[in-house]
Length: 412
Image (cartoon, rainbow, N blue to C red; front, side):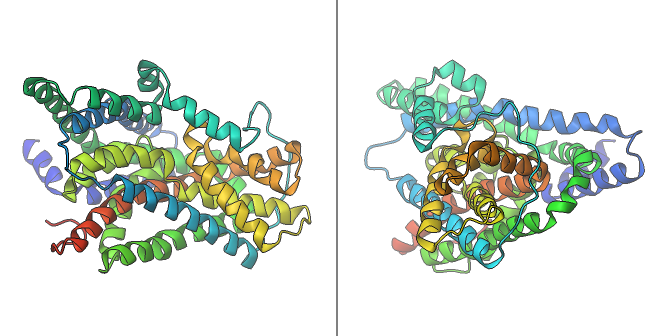
């Protein structure tokens, strides 16, 4: 048994995850009833990631800030600029896609019990209130804007603390990192359970009538991941970006696709940043921040769904209005984490630009939930993998400017 486990652990994590993925599909196809107990593996895996992520972020940020020395530079500003640029360009790509491939929706009943934000001001207000949320409540609810804020504030307050205190913080952060490693080792079982759940769900049949919309949404996200993001990376590092792009999609995007949670994928991304040998002081802040504000996938969904609604109702949208929509989508997407329901519930806010009433807008939201099985998975994969991509890009760009040599991807 020990030899078997040793051989299993000697296989790369990605290969083990693929094995788990195939096992989940086979069980769902051939033993959909008998294999139902494997569902617990998916729930346990996502639950463990969500449980460890808030406390990991809190201690990593606090430790990094407390031990940060004056004059020591980080790349946070560059990373935030890349986040904002990537999100805006994703929204712009969605506008162009919608004009080339217009979509007409089949509208049904409105969604009951949902409360979308009434305007952009409310989204920003929610985001700001999350900044000053009670720290215990922020940790409990997984409010990463609040966790980041309190981690930074406490880190600054502890900058003059004794070396022994800073050592304790660092040891705590290291121990939590080791715990994350243990959780990640169970990813193959977790993915197996999540895939089994996705394949056996009854909602897949409903996707047929919305096939064109799904193809356009997913196609646009692929374009962003494989064309726009690599161009951004190349402009910054002046080297072939695809080794890094594919590393991020393979090691971050696959797990994010199945967990469908940027928050749950934070530990995965932290681990990948460590493999890429990036600066811990930087990625301990940029990764949880990216899970909140780097939302290129959300910008694609909000823009395409909104323009599809306008096209369905016969509303003509000119280019300037569409560009304004992409800007609104980018800003709204950055506030997604503060709105229950994620990007889908921000659609009524966006379609209000065209004068579409809320009851019709909520029918569009209903369509969004129907296709969410695929749309939300692809959206999360794009959002989460881009967090690592742009964090690494900023560090490589800094090394290029300093004339230092660097390897794009994992230097192992």
